[in-house]
Length: 343
Image (cartoon, rainbow, N blue to C red; front, side, top):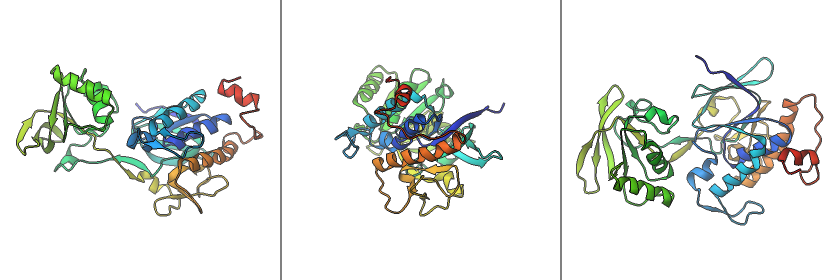
């Protein structure tokens, strides 16, 4: 049975800092937003690649980490009730006879929106494929780079590979529902929250999961279904482990992905925009943040915030064509303060 089409004012592609601030600016002008992101959480590159790394050039925040900035932007957007769709990549964008857009994802979701805002940073984050011969044959059947539905792994014999937050989080969260759980990492140090590492080691000490040092070198099975793997430990010794599911979390790489096929007159894999509205060559599609280009462009988060404010003014004209746009300040406008819940 086909999924129902989700109708909204604006679809924002990318839930990084600039995409999150877009929710706020669009919300002030009475536009409802659904956000789509290939990652499993908000924050984009900030939260995924350097959640604990300090950022020093956000106005008014002399020092803030990627995760803290994400948390603050989520709090700021909250009054406008944004709807998030994670682990989804936009595959198709199609103009409709009434001027709206049909947006389809690889997970089968369909949206109808009057405006599209591309805030995808350097493009889609694609998972890095581990260098295991023949792994492509198993992808999507018994090798997965993201957990879209935990229930799909119930009763499975799971091996997770990696040492970052995603690897540790899913090891801990899936452990109660799987038949067996093992985590493999090349070393005993992790790039993950200490509390998660401690919880994993506690579960290992209680024999609720196996923690292995080494790397997967071979996959065994037929027709895309894993039956086991060969593991080489740090002493170069090999042994077999019986598993039917492998989840490699080796980080992410940036690729433009399907955006390259949307006819937006790309320039060196970036989307040219005007500096008045940050609209692309296609009316009704905007690009903000690191994915756009224009004379004098600086790839800074604060630049993206500025771009979003101007984008929202033009987006209003597509979403509310018969309404008058009145510029207001949040400091003095009681109607804006009411929307924010502070009046």
